[in-house]
Length: 231
Image (cartoon, rainbow, N blue to C red; front, side, top):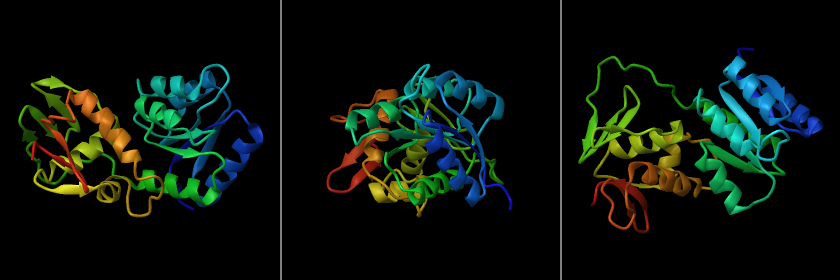
């Protein structure tokens, strides 16, 4: 069976880590395990995984610190495991660069679905014809180079933040529902809380120095979702 990708599972409960690994391996992933924060960062640096399934609570240092450190050298997808359905945990996880979260206890089916949906997302690949950067006021989005700038200053985004911005910017006069954004960024077989989009958009606005009340770039379309420009 051809590998679907390399996954690093970071979980201090060793029996749970082994169960998660067994389900992922059964689906065709190559899986490595780490059980604490320092070990997770060390293995991620050595293995360069495609996806990190990362528990929030870890010995050494926690999943938040692991994610911060990962984002200094890898754009691997990060799926954070949170121990309770706590909005604060979700916001913190996404704010440090996680792409998505899943609440314990979770079903193996949901975990596999999330992993597959993430790894089906296209990697940056040069198109057959170079495309001009998209300019919306002071915002420039280069979808080929995957770079963003505001007033000529580069803005560092996570992969998911960039993908959301690019989806909106490529159709600047359109309004997108959360479901349409998820379809564009995560893929049609993703399932989970659609409000994950709101958290990513909030971080995106902060990095773009955009005011939700008087937006220059990302606007809220009441009763629908989001769009680009001031409307």
